[in-house]
Amino acid sequence: MAILKFAGVKKGFGDTEILKDISFEIEEGKFYTILGPSGSGKTTILRLIAGFDQPDGGAIYFDGKQINDLPANKRQVNTVFQDYALFPNLNVFENVAFGLRLQRMKKRAIQLRAQEALALVHLGGYAHRELDELSGGQQQRVAIARAIANRPKVLLLDEALSALDHKLRKEMQTELRQLQRQLGITFIFVTHDQEEALAMSDQIMIINEGYIEQSGTPVDIYDEPLNHFVADFIGESNIIPATMVKDFVVEINGKQFTCVDAGITPGEAVEVVLRPEDLDITTVESGKLAATVDSQLFRGVDYQIMVHDRDGHEWKINSIHKTTVGKEIGITFDPEDIHVMRKGESQAAFNARLASYQEVDHDQA
Amino acid sequence: MTKHNFGRLFFTLPYYLWLLLFVIAPLVLIFYQSFLGLDGHLTVQNYLTYARSATYLKMTLNSVWYAFLITAITLMIAYPLAYLIAQLKRRDFWLALMILPTWINLLLKTYAFIGILSQSGPLNALTKALGLGSHQLLFTDAAFVIVAAYIELPFMVLPIYNAIVGIRPSLINASLDLGASRVQTFWRVIFPLTKGGVEAGIQAVFIPALSLFMITRLIGGNRVITLGTAIEEHFLTTQNWGLGSTIGVVLVVAMLIVMLLTDGANAVKKGGKRG
Image (cartoon, rainbow over all chains, first blue to last red; front, top):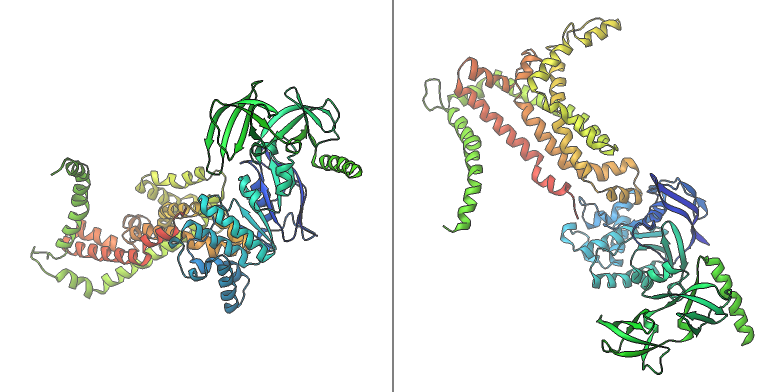
């Protein structure tokens, strides 16, 4: 059963509409990520869940009850703030115990709970430190401990890792994921970092300009982006205008290729996505396309190679093998590497189409 | 001497001169004067006179009491006011309104109050119109305290306002998020974080209030005699500069005590913005 539900939620500030029509359901015990560029409305969604703002339209349900106007302090939700928002006048222990003291718990119980929360974020011995003795990463952990000490049903994390350096951020991603499994509560993580979203989440919701563009598992979203925005925003991609010739055949730049998409009207203008890591470099003769290498960038794990084909179209290729700038190469890819996107197709329509021809597939098999 | 050192000296010299001429020299002079008798010889007589006189003791207590009253009343008005202004949309405008009266000459403001509080003033006109009769408002203790509090108010509002505005909004949200009500948030987060501002405000009001003399004379009608009045009398009327300086030293010591009690430096560090 859904612990949290948004039904047609709208929210604006002054003349600007931030959230236009947001509906979703959040299940218990999963790691959700709300992903979107700056100004897309993702933090506003978090503020509505936490109760810092009230929606202008629509309804928010928590545990089946409508909570549109329930004040923040009455909600079983806790937040890890982007700037940590630790109380500078209190030490580590008192910060973590802040919520527990408000519940008028016994001294001994507070002690236990706060220590337990600190141990969960590996800060067991830090209870009596002052905040200014801690590094940024440790302050981050205190903020998490403070939020989980209250044992919320849902934990909200607002760009929680964005202030940390790359290495620490990677570590915290793993730790947060572990923590979520350990506690079994719902995490809703807001970020603009797609890599972070892919690494941590059970479910990703992509927000843009006040609408949900797509939601699904990281694999679904990466492999089957619904539209140009999602394809461009998640991962790296070559997005090319194309025409659907018939089921399982698409025409790209005047050449026909076999693909795995169907259920689209023949002759319809579509876009195809080819991930740079799905493109392989081969000899000109065995390639599906012939191209010239324009530039090559070493990135540690791989090379990013920019090429242009004989018709002048640019392609981005990620390869672990290096090549030579100026060299003629062939590009090859498999039918399943081509992902066809219809313009303006909704998530429901996409799923229905997918189901229709995958069933056909099964029948044939 | 290197070139760098010379440049440094050149730019810091005016400040050292200023400190020497207008801070250190007057303090030394007052301290020295306080040990001079009427005949111009060095003596501790002034201190003995001060310590043995019941009048001066009473005056000192009076000064501290009135300064305390003025500070307390100013604080009680200033804190909610600063809090309110900080919540307003056009807070800079309201703050400017609050500060505007400090641009008007103190004497002018005091005379304005004489007009307002006098027998034929608007306040008495109002009470008469309401059938409550006319009252002696001027030259009362209450009038003195009210006018002094009015004049000191901006100096209390400003540091408190700055402290409130300096609190990151996410701290308030964090408090609510953890289950605190608005009232609990005030006492557990906002108030502790604005303590530095309150302490700065107390220093800014209590210390000048201790040595007020013009308002005591014009509004208090010399009914309230504070140490400030006593110093004025000794320097201008009785010409006993030695005893006047002694009282001056007493005031300096009193101010030092207040500063130590409010422990400004530490409070500012704790209440300040943090990254």
